[in-house]
Amino acid sequence: MPTISEGQSSVTGDGGFLDLLIYNAQNKIPVLKLDNIVDALTYIGAEFVKKANENLNNSDRVASGFLGDSIKPLEIKVLGSLYTLEINVADYYKFIDKGVNGWQNSQGSPYKFQNYSGKSGKKESKMVDAIRKWVIQQHLQSRNTSKKSGHQISKREHKQSRITDASLSTAIAISRSVRKKGLKATHFWTDAETQVKDLALDKLSKSLKIDIVNYLSN
Image (tube, rainbow, N blue to C red; front, side, top):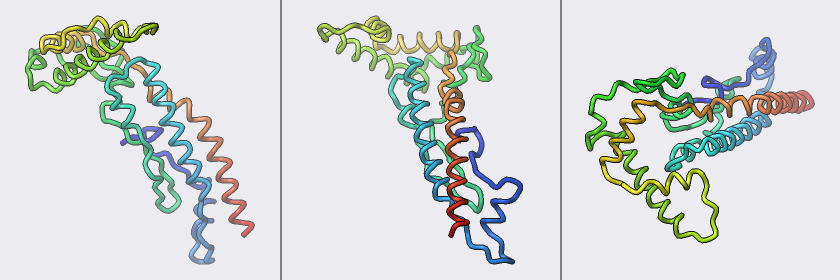
């Protein structure tokens, strides 16, 4: 389960100052509650999900919609002076983000398909099964598109209209081609991190100041 920065996205004290404010047993300093920081992290999480989904849709790589639906911010975790925002996402997001090298073509990815051995041609193959479901879905969508009147056909809909065979052989052929050529990277996740970074720094900085001022004034 990654976070926005592929590690722990957190807010801690600078030079121990925040830790000193949060707890000092000797002087019995009361606990500093960073309510505005929690609100800021919640907002940042929502913005990250929005950007990631926008990037994914713009990449024209949305099939079932499962990946986009899986991107959800979890409840902010608070452990002492550590505040963590985690983003839930399907495990295979990294392959869509970074791409996958084919056994013949390179996509500049750290991931790679193994040389085609025929295994993906079996009915029990997860890859073939997933592709077959996608083919059936595309075929049904193309039939619905053809029934529309006065509708301008998009590039994706044009591709769908060319899919007419939802048989197992079609899924096997597509699987073989994907393994051979690989998958191009979309950078939908990496770009979302970059897009949200400045917003996160600004939001967290302002929220931390407000929380500290409120603490000291009370």
